[in-house]
Every structure is written in C-alpha cells, then in structure tokens.
Amino acid sequence: MNSRKRVLTALNRGIPDRVPWVEHSVAPEIRAALMGCEPDRADWIEFAQFIGLDAVTYMGLQPMFVASATTSTGASRSAGGGLHSREDWSAWVQTWPDPRSTALYADLERFIVRVRRTDLAVAYVGALAVDLVIQSWGIERFAYLLADEPAFVLEMLDR
Image (cartoon, rainbow, N blue to C red; front, top):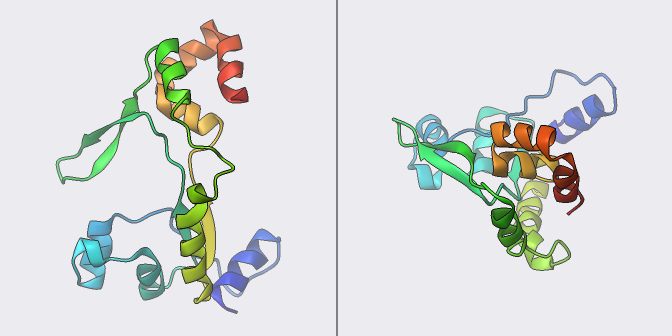
C-alpha cells in the first residue's frame, strides 16, 4: 500500500497496512540536520520521502496580523495577536487578498504538481475563519471580545 492510499484508507475508516505517519511541520533546521544539508536546501517534500512520511502539509494562508518572537535557538514563533482595536480590524480587513484570485493559489498549485509525482498524500494547513480571527487578536483578547462584544465577533466571522 503506498502512502497516499494508506492515508486515504484511514480517512475513509478503512484498515491501512499500518498507521499513516503525518507531521504538521518540521523546522527547516531539524530537516537539514537529519538530511545533512543546509536549512535552505531542506525541501519539505524531499524530507518527507527521506524519513518515510505518508503525507506532507501545505502551509497556506497564515494569520497576517500576528506578532512574532524569536526563541533562544533563533526559531520564529507566534507571540500573540497584533490587533488591538476595531480600527485595527477595519484597516486589516482592507488588506485581505481576494479569495477568488487565482494568484492566491498559485503556490499551492505548484506544490500539488510536485506532490503528484510522489506517492505522498497532501493536506492543506492554513488559518481560515475562526482560527484566523483568534490568532490575529490573540486568545486572551479574543476571549474578552467573545464575552463583551459577541456581535462584533459574529461580524468578524461573517467577514
């Protein structure tokens, strides 16, 4: 059973030959160390094949208004939401890409073409809908908004 079939069998509640191995992501530095190459050469699809993953994830639309911090190892991580007011929200919404634009999906299309040359399954990972809103405000601010301004939260989610 190849990787793609293994993942699809499990998702369809079948019994695959073994449990599919899927990782959400692996830091480029770790991929590089395991593959014995420089971080900028540690390709995600090649890495998945190298260690025997059954699927790769495509990191799509990510929160566009999230503060970031650098860890002691130099890795980047989320440091909370960057929105603080309705004005921030209104200004930010104006910068959103048009979801009907084919350019928005060009990288995903290229990724899928590459994955199709393998027997790997592919999954899309991105911040959409509620996840995008929560991460952009930060969980604590979003919790207060949910309690204090539920109509505004609904307005954001409808957008």
